Length: 224
Figure 1 (cartoon, one colour):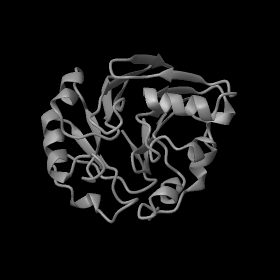
Figure 2 (cartoon, one colour):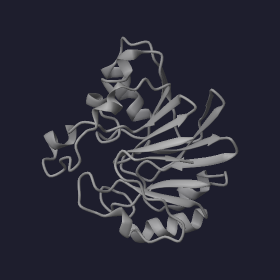
Figure 3 (cartoon, one colour):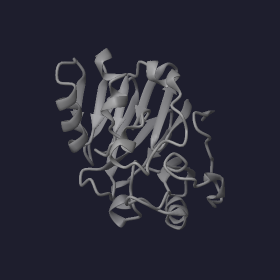
């Protein structure tokens, strides 16, 4: 499996050509309403030409469910869109005439496609339908938390042994900071991939302390 960090909470999973995109934010949409949150890293337009099989949208904030970015993918059609309820409403309203499979994918829901199992788990965030997603393939569980705080409800919803956890540690906007992120990863006993830093701020993920971590650069692909 190859995984590429798209910045913020966005990832591309490539499983032998079966492409999964999670929370892609490849525009500067947020700047229009929050000028302080402008892109520090340019968009790499190569990623706008991908044809994904599955798109996962963890919640309905613009840096995770961005119509300007999704305009590059959803009009292609024949895409499975696993979206938490508020994000599901957004994409159905913005792209009503496209033949995609829009699935309202909320905590507790499961979906299998091409031998890959997706499980939606609880996230503690300001969107009350926010989720994280566990992607299970070849005996490994990859947990992408979306946006979340450290919360017992999150752990209660994760019933699988997690091998890799991708967690937000920017400490703003109802996300964990470095301290809680370290506790979170230790609690899961998983390899931690910190994220959600460096696009709207100058936080250096290499300074995130954890015993077992992998740090991505923007647009870097790693093999798992």
